[in-house]
Length: 400
Figure 1 (cartoon, rainbow, N blue to C red):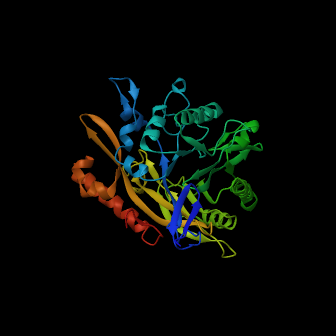
Figure 2 (figure 1 turned 135 degrees about the vertical axis):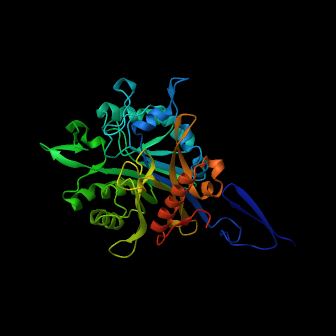
Figure 3 (figure 1 turned 45 degrees about the vertical axis):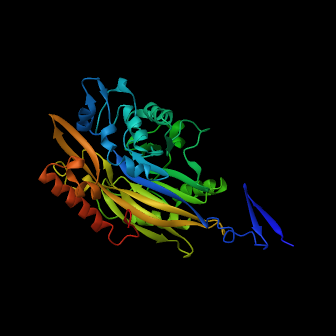
């Protein structure tokens, strides 16, 4: 007699003839892993020359879309993309401005959404450049475009972090910025006093009493774990500007957060790229991947105006998160990157800023508007800078 045995696994019904097969994933050819790919970039800045470049006199509007058009496919390549917004959306009534107090047109948020970003970090030293009203309005502008915000919130009842389930993996995202020294006991960000009633609306830490301050981040990690987060991503605004190596404080913080169970630490503020490496916890049972600084993604910080050309260099760093569907273990998979460079040039008497993916741009310069030999050399130098910095890192070029 022929025996028909039916196994029901989830929504699928599988029929096997004449043989009982144990209901494991190998027997029924189900996937052993699920994955999520995160794409992370550094600082998105808008200096005064960028404001002038993005204003269109014909329409009397600002449009930042072209800044991201060449890197858009690389951001959409990931399941989720995040960036640090180093400006505010304080509104046109305050007047648009670059450094030192940044206020950018809302249309930048439209461009970020169009480019493929999902999560925007709003905790950095320019968070309150346009006051608390500007900080609140920045959150509104981003959220109105469907962008999610980490690092700041509008009230105690809101949350400044996320726990998102993507492809069956729950990931916690949180961001913190350094504080400047207190004034009369009051918290300051970039030496701007934060009213005491709003202090808890900005996720921040002081470099004073560092171990005690990091307990706030530990508590956040624990809250996200309680919400089901299986992988913890922290975006930290820290370090020394224009230094290509992390300082001892960054390393100390990274070590503490590895002990507390962070899985991925992404850094910003130096405005130049810094190395990435695994930092092992003190007990040796856990390691956190740390990208000490993601550098500038776009800005007007150029070799002509600063002591270093490295402010022109950037990268899209990809981190694959894998989950073993048999054991439930979640861990980093493949790590890769795309070197980027801010191409600034004149076209038809108009200044243009475009972020270039350097591998493709150098392979086909004309398609990426790289028509100047001088700029081709600068782009090649930028690629070499980044490749040299990441040479001993756990990452390889995308597609390796």
